[in-house]
Amino acid sequence: MMDRLLARTLNASIMSMIVASATGSVVLFYRGVFQLMTRQTEPGAGSILLAAVLAVVCVLLCRHRHELADS
Image (cartoon, rainbow, N blue to C red; front, top):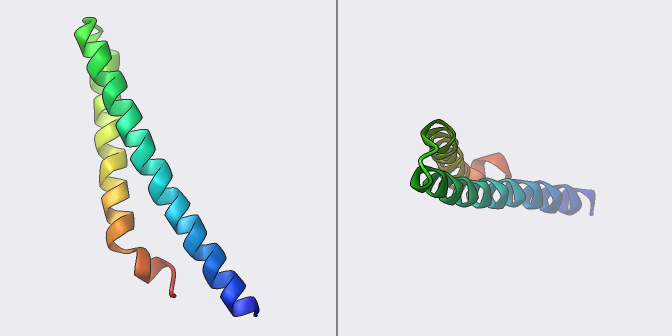
């Protein structure tokens, strides 16, 4: 019983990290694009760079989710 609970909790936490990084990436990308459209280059470039980092984190979490949460 505890093994199943631990496995499901670990799987839920990995999936929530994937969802959070994907959502953050999309939000920061659109924020950066809108900042670039209003000629705020430094904050816009920073937002897009951070969005790219979160997108890479999301891809790596998706690729290795079965290794992180042994189900």
